[in-house]
Amino acid sequence: MSAVPAAVQAPPKSGLRPMTGNEAIARGAWEAGVTVAAAYPGTPSTEIMESLATYPATDLHAQWATNEKVALDVAIGASFAGSRALAAMKHVGLNVAADAFMSQAYIGVNGGLVIAVADDPGIHSSQNEQDSRLYGQFATVPVLEPADAQEALDLTRFAFALSERFDTMVMVRTTTRMSHTRSGVKVGTRTEVPSRGFVEDRVKNVMVPAHARGRHMALLEREAALKAYLRDSPIQRWEKGDPKVGIITAGTCYTYVREVLPNASVLKLGASWPLPAKLLRDFCASVERVFVVEELESFIEREMLALGLKVSGKEFFPRVGEFSPELVRAGFEKAGVLAPRPQAAAGWSPEPIARPPVLCAGCPHTSTYMAVRATGARVAGDIGCYTLAALDPLRGIDTCVAMGSSIGVATGMAKAGEPRPVLATIGDSTFLHAGIPALIDAVYNDADITVMLLDNHITAMTGGQHHAGTGKTLRGEVAPRVDYEALMRAVGVKWVRKVDSYDLAAMHQALREAIGHRGVSVVISDRPCVIDPVRIKGPPLAIDDKLCNACQSCMNLGCPAMTWGEATFEGRHTVQIDPALCVGCTLCAQVCTVDCIKPTQAAQP
Ligand SMILES: Cc1ncc(C[n+]2csc(CCOP(=O)(O)OP(=O)(O)O)c2C)c(N)n1
Image (cartoon, rainbow, N blue to C red; front, side):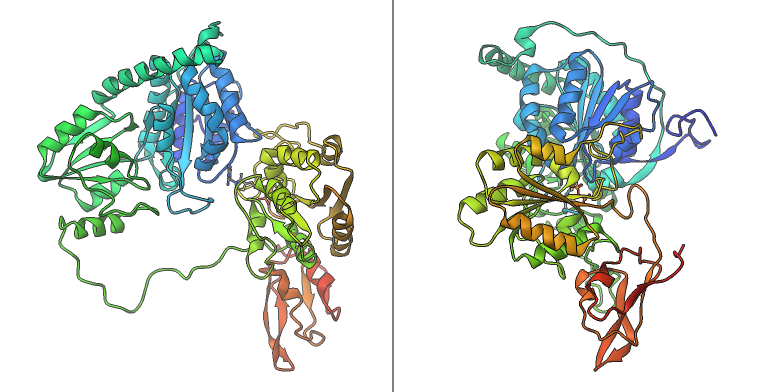
């Protein structure tokens, strides 16, 4: 085995290394000499930190933080101390980190400070599709937008240099397509950047009103200086072509535009904030019609309209969803730039059939929600794999707002006099992320609610990341582990019980008692996730179809290992279990009304 980590090894002979956008951001940060990096996982940004952790620990400290604000604060601290630092998060993570983000914009940096934010147009795996460029503008923080993996690396390196040159945090903004698409990258080597050391300057570093007023002025001066600098920067690329049509674009939209209109004039912006007014004016003057092609908000378009420039954008390209070459083509057809294509003949469609997401076979959340549903309670849900319990057949969640919202929402429902018992269900990672303050609030304000902590010992939804409750760090080192029961009691919860998630009877009993308790009660549903960090596979169960009475109780689990069988009972199909999928959790055997489900002897490979 090579002593050189895979991430650092020499590129293949072609000179290009295939990388996703996220891997390229990590590479760019490593090459730029980043010393401290922190993130909270979130699709599509997660792999930035996972990838950084493949670089030597002697080069950089890389860590999972309990939430995005902590991640940004850790990076800010490293910058204060004089080192180059990176924080990474998904778009909604920036909402969590926004308080620090807005203030740090006033303070600026010591060591270069870069925040990588990944947006999710099309909502592949999020609760909304907000546009983080607006945050850049809001905070007056420059926003760089790579269009492919090479640019992701180059712009990340550039971001650190820009950060130190202009005393500003810099945002590298990607989208799902950009973060997850692989393309060839010419990599470089790491530049060690010695620490600048802490610079004592309270007027700059301590945001109290008297200091902040001055810093706000400094921020606006910096914005003007950045505008002038970025106007002439090679990251803004004017590709001269057919003067009839000019397109202003950034990020992956550039590649769609080039595919659809290879000969058009294009102004490809490497920085979408602050915008170079003179460059935009000159570009508009050089072409007959100008279009802005941008996903989500009409961000560039609105700025151009404010400059008095004649431009079209959202009239032809939607403000929601993810773009594609087909969608961009359709927009230009609508605008009369491209001739409409003949309608495809109706008939065979290459679109795959949509398959709704389901909880895995043996997922411990399944039994938890079987028991939750049986209580008849009003359930404030949260964000994680368990949000899938909102769907059929479990139908165990009534609301889901944002990470950590469940407990506060439950408190509000109970205080509003909701007639049913009120339950909050929250995963372990989500509880640590933003649930603890809400639990303290519930105890403090004497809310009559039950909190169900779904402790599957991992952050499953985003692919199995460690957190402060798993006992391991990002690099797999042993770490202290949060003791949830002790924590609950320490904040004043009087009724706490831990139950094995697979023990349905005990779960029913615990929930009944918890709901009967006046005030805040907590049930900890405890069982490791069946696929992360290790795949769990016990002997599969099998159904004796001679005994099965097709009552469908087991089908109500929604377990993907259960299918309808060939045999029938009183005209209804009996059930069978796919041994390859079954993990032997026994939940179906526990709900079976005729005791016809039994374990087989051997575990399937
Ligand atoms: C503010 C914010 N940060 C990150 C995410 C991405 N995300 C969705 S659920 C989740 C955590 C899920 O872990 P856990 O609560 O332990 O539940 P599990 O999926 O393991 O059941 C994360 C990080 C998000 N949706 N919102």
